[in-house]
Image (tube, rainbow, N blue to C red; front, side, top):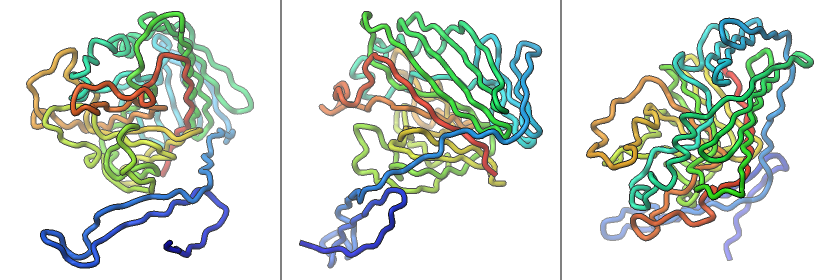
Length: 348
């Protein structure tokens, strides 16, 4: 038995990272070559701060088809026809692309295994509902210097209903709560993912996050990715598979932030661990659609914007029989009720 001395305190969570290296050179392998790694949890709990506290005066008004939320250095706009956030402007800078909607997302770009498993046909209703969710109501109220926005939607393609709730303070800190109610008397396919999508404008390249890494990982492909704090770039999130497909996901994320060269950006955390990705490609750039296309990584054109996915979960990549196998049940999202809450904050 090997005894490893260490000291720790009672704050946060702790991990022990073990690396096994060659003590001497072997054919084709130098001394010190890493042959195995392991990460052991030493206990503790990460406690995210997800409560929004009033910071000063904030107001709302309805004008030109928008619900406008404003404070001294903040302006946010919700489109009253769709119910989605369309503008996030803080301290003189747009932190959301001007042509984007901050909206729910239930679809992922198909991977090679998905085509083998006939996923485009089996799960097509979730792609349809992502693009055509129907607003029933949007309303707001101001309580103790906090703005609350409520939006209700119907999702006939999947016999579901969606309730969105946003709590916003004067500093632009926003708690987002997404609740899906399923009609379990109906037979509906599993969800590819459950989350939200944010598009950032050009210039936001630096990513820091606390979760599994440094390489991409998925719920059925993440044991080799250790929990840690990683500093990367948006470009590093993309892996150039021969066929464009889903890429760049990170699991068991506690928090993540994306910044520009000036240090400005957004910080995300959630009530529980979540999945995230940030790419210079949109889902539609990576997704071949219902049928496989003869495309290659070199055909893609990198965008200046950054697509950020914040997910409760994304289903596994499957392929356990080499190609075409459905992910194991524990790595899918069965059709049922789901709720997901997270917080985003401007950072500088």
